[in-house]
Image 1 (cartoon, rainbow, N blue to C red):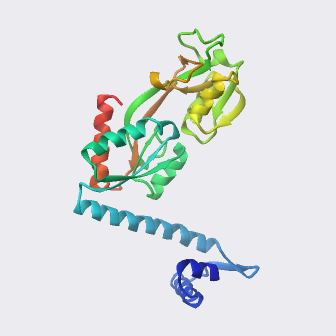
Image 2 (image 1 turned 90 degrees about the vertical axis):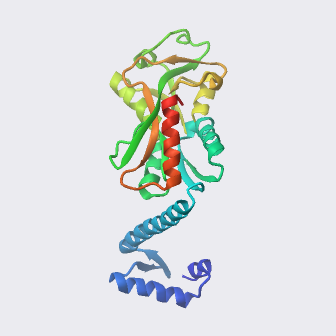
Image 3 (image 1 turned 60 degrees about the horizontal axis):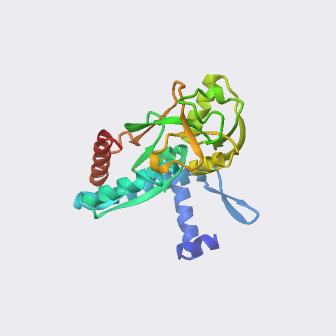
Length: 278
C-alpha cells in the first residue's frame, strides 16, 4: 500500500480511503490480504479490467475531440506486423505525411493475435495485418495479396523448380515462425491440407532470421514472396502451387467504433494506395 501511495504521490491514508470508497460503491472487497500484502481478488481483477478499458476510452475521446477541433493534426495509433516493419509501414507513413505533416503516429509492432487484442481493447485505431482476422468484431479492407514461397539455399536440389507443392519438400528440415504469428497459422494449414507433419528444427519471430538460416543451409522455410530488392543473398524463392498459398494483407479496425477524422483520412489514403497497388 505504501509503495502504491508513493507512486501516486499521495498519502497512504488517502489511498486507503479512496479504495474503501470504491469497495463500498461496488459492494464487495477488491483485495485480499496475503502475507501482509494486498492482492487483487476475482472482484478486483474484474474492476481492473473495466477500469483500464474506461481509461482507454477516455483517452480516445480526448484524442477524437482534439482531432475534430483540428482535423489537420492528431495521432493515428497504428499496429502492424513484424514483416511489414522494414518497408511497407515506413513507406506509407512517409507518403502520408507529405500531405499531412502535422499528423503523428503511435506505432505498435506485434504478431497478428496481439494486434487483434489491442484493437479489441481500443489501444490502437487501425492495423495493417494478414491474414484477415477470423473474429467478426473487425472491419476489413484488403490492400494486396502476397504469394507464399518455399525459401531454399541456392544450391538446394529444389532451387531450380519453377513452382513446388509443400508435399514435395516434406523430407526437408523446416525453419518456422513461432505461434501465434499469422503466417505460422497459414503455414500450419498448408501442411495439414497436404497431410504433412513437418520436421521443425528451429522457430523464430522474424522472417529475416528464417531467410538468413536458409542461406546458411540450416533448413528451408515458407515465406511471403519478397520484393526483388529484399531478396536474401544465397536464397532461392520457389512459388508454392498449393491451394491457399497466399497471405492477404489488409486494414483492420473495430466494428462500430467511429474513427477520428485523422484516422478516417489515413484509412482513405491506404485504401487509395491499395487500389493503385501497394
